[in-house]
Length: 305
Image (tube, helix red, strand yellow):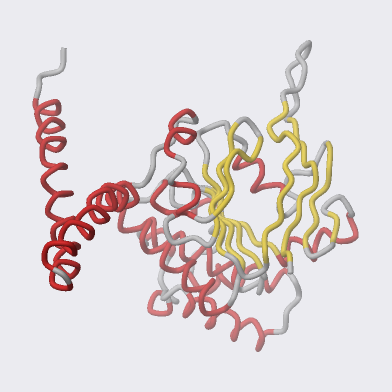
């Protein structure tokens, strides 16, 4: 079942006087399956953030349609329900934190929806537990790290009990530790609660464990498939200014050696040779990477002109 569907989706930001609007989205056709973990990649200006904001009616199409579980985002009568079902987490957590105490911040949205006090208490406790922030319940948000703040922002969205969470560059301002904290939290929500996750990012390695990867370029979907299917398209990614994650490159290099190693060692040594093939492939991969690492270190050590 589809959580979100777009049909020939187009969007253009207002142009300056005397200029024609430029389409940020150009006929995007896609469907996001309920319960899936989808990563949307693309360079700056590719349309990925515009696409994200279209998924819960922050931005409305100038052409085509967006449906959230069958509800048209342009139908004002459905707006509140659409935004309840599809929660948004933005780049800067400080822009989403509104209270001086963590638990009060997480309770803010349910309170404004008129949820009963007992139910709010349950939702706050469950949301903080889901992102491993229960211990910080009575803390002041401004004293937390960037990753912790972003997890509080996610908890605030969870308290609305959405069926889908869209994270628009939510890890962009975080250090590696903060990024890992946020990624672990959203993967846990997807895995344990079945919440659909749409992660917008320019960090290629954040897509490695996704169910599906969408690559956007010039307002269109350029590539779409599993991480393996997308990241084997090295040349198309390069032309779009994107690079393949290091782990995929390592696996690819290893694969070049592993298959010949199996053949040669199996023919000469039999079963022990097959068992040795992985070790030999690992060694050859390492030996081939050493000259590259030395070259990079030399370049980095050269004085800047």
